[in-house]
Length: 144
Image (cartoon, rainbow, N blue to C red; front, side, top):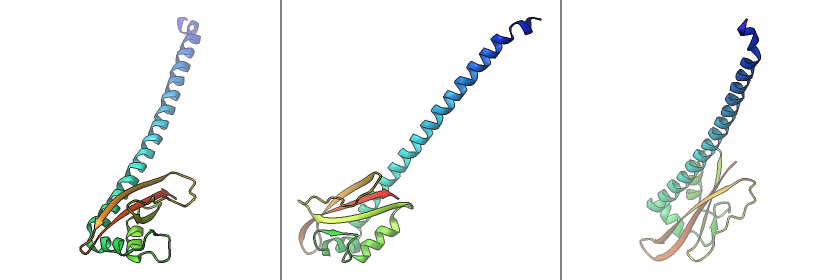
């Protein structure tokens, strides 16, 4: 008989428990989505640095930077095909990247209209084996 008398109380306890479970589930989903977007951003920024480091250290890519006219953009028709193919081959799947080469004192601006976030990194190259000619090399990447 007592089980029947306290039936309303147990239903309220179960309802409160289910509400807490639903709220915790929602919070966990939000946190998981936030963490995965942060991981994507970190991998994109790391890949930008890897590309720039390779261009900075590999002699054939470095000489292409110094032989380019200033300013030079990877979207231009006269841009070095070696640098352009290296960029395309080493970009992450689902991202679009552009390289800008300008003088050390110039501002290399990204001049494309993109709906999302654009992530950039830059490196300064100062000399090749024959001359001192400082260049700024910037990479801009965004998710497609």
